[in-house]
Length: 264
Image (cartoon, rainbow, N blue to C red; front, side, top):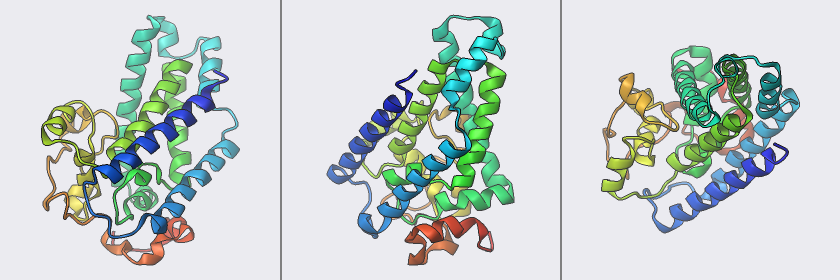
């Protein structure tokens, strides 16, 4: 597990590069705001989030999982099932936890104020998949820690889940075309870019739908799925009505969003 950071960074930069390249070759939408105006702040948030997590959580989820495994705590350590079964079940369960976390961050006013920063971007591309307020990231980390301990999630499962979550978040925020037949098939199992783009619509009903980040089954199961946006994908308006001022392209204004009063 000494290679955790290498694995995570390798997958992050690998997926990011592939999705960014696909956006150039097969763009789904014409961007109105140039990348050089958005990417510094969006990627700056990623760096800041990483620093905050490392500062506040010196013990990573993997190291915590190793300790829990040694102590024999948690459901999976009691059941002692084959590791492959445990990893698959842990990844599925943690994915459901993230789904419900996402729902709660939309429904609870204080948490929505934090999450608005993710929705305030008026464009939709790979950088949006990692653009979350540091306070939201800290709360999310605390939630994951609770379930890692309660379930006795193995270190392998923690790495697998983190890699999948980060990779699929960048994939489904990608501004690239998938053939309609591929999208229809793939969204039966996974969240595709067209599936998740609905979630970033300016219309509130669509904003509060399609909460999945990885597996699409939760939106089907819990009736939060909207198949297509009101407007065509290549014309739909992205973002939130109250955060369309160009000043919100700057990093310090992004960080201030949770503390700005608005009608929503």
